[in-house]
Length: 216
Ligand code: PRP
Ligand code: URA
Image 1 (cartoon, helix red, strand yellow):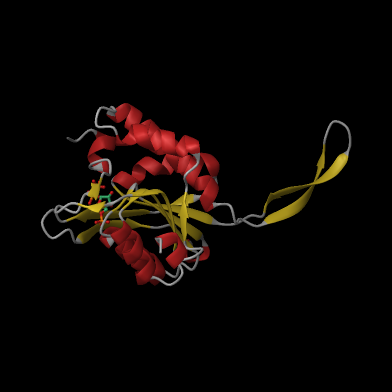
Image 2: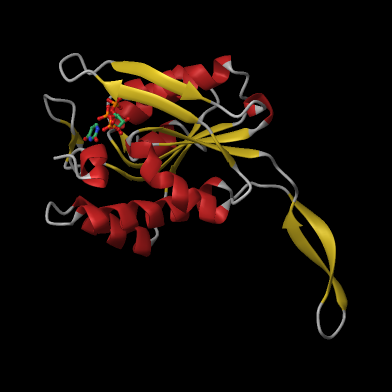
């Protein structure tokens, strides 16, 4: 049974042909930092479409050049984007293009290179975070340690409606996140084969933070 079947309705694979195309370029070791950043932004925008698919609509009257008619607009939902630093920063711009009124909270976390355990080093949320629907963004979901820590932190802040948007996931990470929280939904462009002994996603795309910021 696939993860999508096992956790029905809680895992969305965003596999539009344009997403698959862009993700393949993102994976390529020869893709430059500049292009990598652009692709992360674009893929975040695509994921944003899926993450906001269930936003409530309301009827509004619109006068076209020809007549007045009833149309639909998004009913003022309060949203927040929470990137897991550093790599999650790369996805903020694409999400904000779609949701310009969203607020942004920052959660700093790094993975210890030997234990692979996440360490929180920074947190700054909008004051009314508990009243917002939150999309946590991070390009990579490997062991799931960073994402589950971020989700626990946000639950402790009182957040009720929570989604996690990643670009590439290992099956172990998807399972860890879904088992750690009964309500969180996960969106990913791909679920890869697994992880290597250093807990890098295989085939993956390497270290997303280093590729976005050119630090390696
Ligand atoms: C990467 C990635 C995730 C985390 C995923 O961040 O951006 O936050 O690892 O791994 P996990 O699922 O096993 O926790 P990293 O710790 O390398 O920090 P960076 O964003 O500063 O590069
Ligand atoms: N973090 C990354 O940036 N890449 C991986 O493959 C795993 C964790």
